[in-house]
Length: 310
Ligand SMILES: [Zn+2]
Image (cartoon, rainbow, N blue to C red; front, side):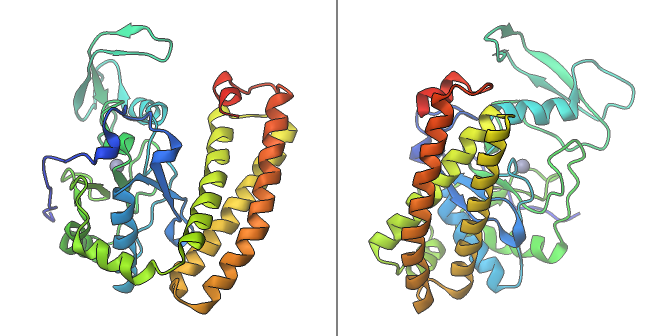
């Protein structure tokens, strides 16, 4: 079996000081367009900077670091509970392949739950107990894992894995455990490795205004999608609104991927960004107004949290 490099302990970046695992605000999660049609990857800075540089270097070497599910980078506390309960049973049973303790915690209704041993189902990957996964800190991404469901099957090819083993440390990433070759997490805190600096100097020649525009538009669309997802609104109006936003997000991801492809110094980029500034800015402003109206109308299923946000 291939020996995976593991750098321990993890040094946390300062942006995580005082934060709670799985409860990170959207503003801390830097979105990076997924590769090969994958979903947007959400990591905290500087993990996101390392990730972007690493993806670019991998692509140059002919490898795609594809993350297949939106829960395969940042993972909320609720998503960690879902992953845990998909893979572990609270009572022992014949055929269980390992066991782990879920320590003392409070459930979603705020009730105290004492530490209890849970038993792993066959054909599943191990999971960190809820609130302890590096995914909940926005530091980890699963590369080439086919499903975040109970199987934990991976499809990371050997050539890409060997590239990661040889190069991931240049961007502050390492594997975490030998049984999960798809799980790579950022360990080097606030250090910005030379390979990241070199990458950013090579691509980051947009004007500060263009850069700000891009971040603002992407951040707004991402935040609105997150709010809608969080509330799982079911009404027709909300489905229409969500479809709208998903279309915007897809379009934006395609544009960002195109920019990454041609390099942001290409003259086309200035034109693309100028177009985006007017068009997407108008559209997202209109969508935000729609969202505000929808919340003001008190649509069923909207939570107090989002009403407060809006
Ligand atoms: Zn993972």
